[in-house]
Length: 409
Image (tube, rainbow, N blue to C red; front, side):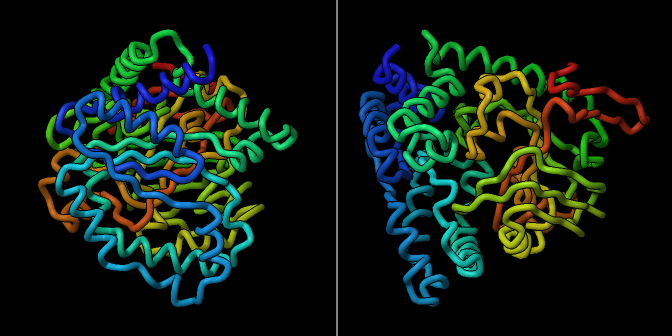
């Protein structure tokens, strides 16, 4: 198929699988200059589905970088209240949320880490009231990727820009199944396969999950009444949507106070416009007590210092090595894609859907049950063909879940 046909398919997936947009729905799209062509296609198809309004929230990489480089220090502590009020009013009014990520992994590399840390804390605190709308699926939301020159250069550093962009788009289409003859049907079949494994894990009722591999020996207890999820989600209004395209994960909630051992990341982490690589953590009673990184240690330091919850896990996710993403054979240097080629964890906030009855209790009550809370939710990869993952039940019986990168269930 041609590029134009694949992009049409991709937009169809976003509208009909990612957000399942229907008549009278409303949509806000977060985009930058590189994702505008895709946003236009999505907007057109959304209106054709009967959507009554599409709002745009636009950012520009050059302007973002210039603010960090040249704005006065007080700019890093400034987040106008009207912006939070505006976003929250949209979400309260039922606007569904689409993020089109066309990210430069190294955008903020020239910026002093301390300035980024101050801004992260400022924005995190300001936007905290909005976190529940996606973490609790109060609206339909979806995150997808779009190619941009800087991302293409990071993924394929030896290629000219045009060739790198073409190759990145080709791999995005392959990873999302947009290059298949009937992508929508392929996603429905994929969702059914994820649901089958999700159901197995929920019936197993594991007490904890053990990870073993080079530099990794970790025991992760799950919260009582944990729920494994994967594939499509259900909004508060009962509508089905796909939060991430692509997605290959089955995920649940680790107990914030019952994680012990060491782990070594198996892929670089692109976070806040900077890259962290060759890093590891040691956990005791759920908390990071030691860590190091070959590249970007200060970035990790600032991330972990965001708040107490940033030092604890909020998500555990299982992913097989045999998937359209890992089969591309490339490192995307983009967490949305790389996390779906590898088992991963997230530092920070947990998803309410992973704990039975979470939305009916207070934050304090959920925290006592082991649900983590934080201003951040940052995924990082710990998985691959040399990492074995085993589920252990309360009677000490064991089930190997992943070995040599493949599902064993």
